[in-house]
Length: 113
Image 1: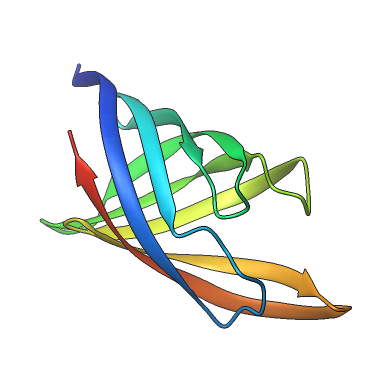
Image 2: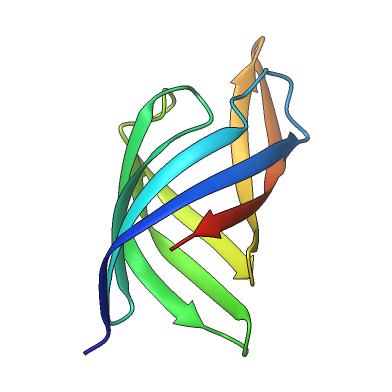
């Protein structure tokens, strides 16, 4: 069993393809047991999000995180998808702005232990 039940991180991100002005600084606390992940972070909408999911090792440095997340205005619970290469990550995003639906990506860099 691989267990790291208190990881403290800070992510810096940029939101591409969206119209709103989003928070780009994300403090993050994570618990990892084997490949299962849970945590909380300060999200792009200036709220606290909680998540649970699983991490899949795809390559030596590449990981895919899949799960469910709370804390966003659009829905109470949303799917979570994040691909990480080393400290860098990319995640799909969606927003509804002035009646239009916009799709984009969040690109970011996360550091911590």
